[in-house]
Length: 409
Image (cartoon, rainbow, N blue to C red; front, side, top):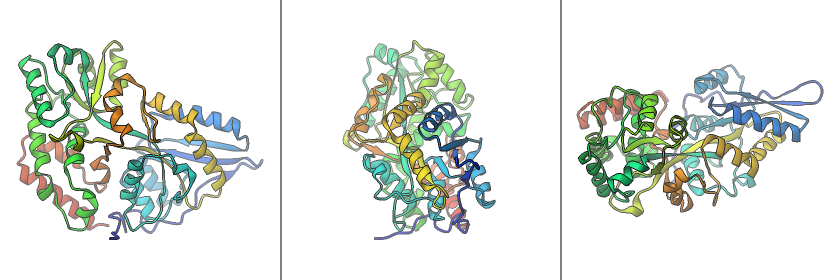
């Protein structure tokens, strides 16, 4: 059955059909603006741009990666000043841009041929099943992991758990050994989301966001087990877990405080930069007692796309195709500790071997919060729940906030 995208009529509606800003430098050189929502990868992008420009002397690519990029992009949209190329996450903003009809359709394009179905499915879900086509090219993925201290795990005699019960047994072993089972860093609200996403990503009904917006589902009637298990995890935290943030957590974990650390793969290089001799591993949180049902939460960290009305479609296609080539793609994944979205391309990073099978077998599910309505502030509500808020009131608050924001669309 066809369903409407829940972003339909969204914040960007009415702003469609705006042209990209590619210009001719006057000497025949085409100038493209490449807008990125990340500031941490500008060095990698700049090096790749220089390589591209050497191969394509008639094209100059200007990288722009401002802080608070989504707000900047929305402001530029209103001013009719959109870039030619975008590198953004597979999140609500992407759905809004597609809903506004602004992005190029890549359906049937060979650039999508070798991309894992899970990541294409995530974009389709963001677009809504009423919207034909695929309007972005998945480029890099991230993953929601449980990072563990290998030396401590060995000393405890523990193994990587494959079921929820085995996971709780591991936490008990750490607690009995007077180690911190889970090093939470809840001073910053977003740091609770890796745990929330791992639980909700595996336990919530399929296409929850779309069905929630249609009035078919609610948090209150579908997320009770999520909250029960989150409360159980919090029992294995530590007394200062609301007093330290992400950077403090990285430093403390690098110093051997804590057996487990709920974070994405992006935290691994940061921890190792603080303690290069530390041996780290990662695994996917086993949310149920059926190993076959436990999936790794992974999302489209970067997708590439061009504006539908760019003045230079051939040049934008050339740049996207270049980034997807083996050399540039490998350089990006290695320098940014990211995962390839291509079929059969599995990272050889020894720290990531615990989730390699998930990628190889496409045992992946998406980040639930990538589908939440913009402006909900779910991370703040989940953080509030960790202080002991009533479970039912918390879930009702999520439903009320979702419904109120949806009325603005």
